[in-house]
Image 1: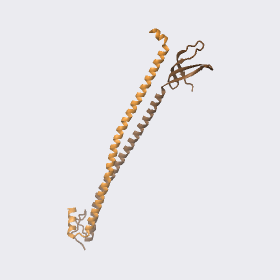
Image 2: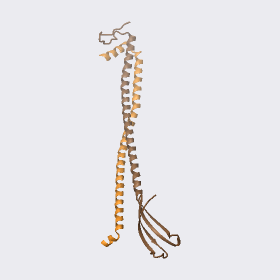
Image 3: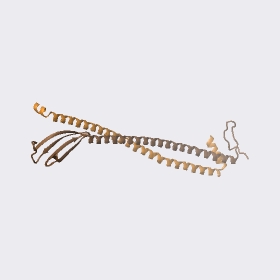
Image 4: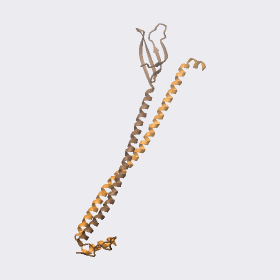
Length: 102
Length: 149
């Protein structure tokens, strides 16, 4: 055994150096791959949050036309009521003020 | 013409006397005021919704920036992995070589090498079809090479 080591020490030394280099290289690659996996997981979380945010934006944007329609309805009703005032009788006007201030 | 029936409370007087025409105008303005008050509430709602939308859009931009940042980092890491893989390559070669310039003294070889960025470590097996001086017909050697350029 000792004779074999003495005879082939250089080859054994080279093999050991090579194995160490390969091991370190693979370890480094595995660490980097793990970092990539972590970052991909973070991206997935952010993308799911983005989907939620886009849904919120959608709901807020669909709400605006509804409010605009409500404003239009209020305006139309107000205009109708204002037109009706010209035809109101004195007693109706009396009722109006009575309801409003009593 | 005055009419006592159209009356409103005042801070200084108990009643304000209005003509019928004034009363109608007053009712119209009051109805308009009520409508505008309701519209104002609705417009406030719209403004609030727009502000919420802007905040959510800002959050979306921040999140998209974060995603881009992470993707940049991933690209950088993948480049490092590619370079690390290039750092060590294994190649084999088969060829023939002459002894000096004697074409009748050709020998063949098979060489395998682990090639790093600057250093190659390998083994070479040589075989000769014809006898050459005192060299054996088959022999092998180990070699380490440093890449000069």
